[in-house]
Image (spheres, rainbow, N blue to C red):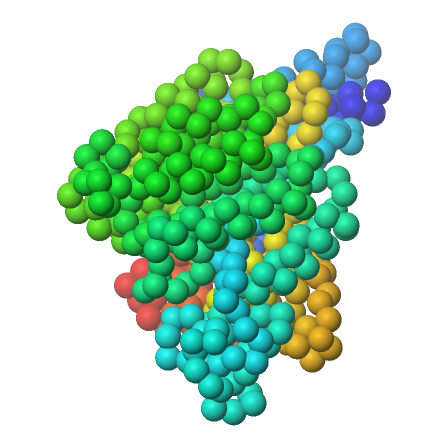
Length: 546
């Protein structure tokens, strides 16, 4: 019965929101007051309906509408209307009248329905494990990677590398990674599966070899397997796994001496040990795969290096290398036909500045087409805690989660993330309901010679979000543009509360860039970015966006 009343309340909320927005069935747009919207964005505790300024006539109309709908809901309940039927009605109003996306509407459904089972999912990324890390070595060297015996003698005691990792240009000590994994296995006993979004090789880019990279791939996979022998792990290929770094040629036209076949073979050999039911054929061909996780649920892992402009092979051919986007669209079409929901995992997020423009555009187009089944996207690479909102010019339709790194390179605290995902039930959405991010503060670990992994924040609580729909993330981007203190909180999370970067702070240029990043998934379309930064007050250099 609680579920029926929840569905009724949900339907009432959607219909009254339709009245409040001045919409009638078939209407496609509305124009809220700029002043009321600004007021709403300055007050995170306010709800979406509070941003609309109503005159007395409108208020009476809404109250009359509430009365009519409430009476109708009572009649439906009395006549035995089922929970499923009322939810169906609510979704119809939300999508067809209010014109929100299905992803957003189903997210709001979660708020008004009884407690449902959930899954806990671990996301780790950018481990960059360095087996040559030496405590006390030079952390202030001239190279891109320090804290090794080869880094030279520290000039002062302050230049000595810390034991648990260092904020300077140093990667992850193996014992720090194992300490983190041990903590996760002890404290998070309900993890259903692991997403591992790439980059295990350290930042000694000038000295990698195929043997060295293969060894790191094997070693890191064995470490993960030792801590999660009974839990599925879904890995992703990172740009650092290749030798030379970033250079992924077209597998249909690769000279033997530059072919990535050795890498794909090494990955397939390790991944088939941790991914149940993996067909390694696409891994051996191009480093990507698609695999069912549970009935009605699939994970698709993409090789994002075929859309990364630092990959110089794209100058020879950037036209859907390895036919990966064609393959991705075909996999999504099959999933749609079979009634499956999908999570996509990759290394480089699609909105990154250095993504090839056609790749960024076409990937976003594919997500737009299959937004009805793509219920989550998860990436790494930047080492920062970020998100990207997908927008089609009229509405947000997707969000990509970019997880912070385990490596502290550079200025960061080692981190990991736990998602709460809609779980096993007949009408599951597989949407992310919340996420918690954990860190280990390196300054504290250095001073106490002990690690303390602790929760930095929960997304919904920290940002005052009712749910994690694309619409909620889109509104958060606008709220950060209007409210610098809210953005400062986001920046703290963005750098995983790393002491050096917090001390450095985020100036106006940084502020604009960070807000623009979260509003962009297609490098060819910056309209949502410009729309957000126009809301900024007291920020220099924004005259061109007025």
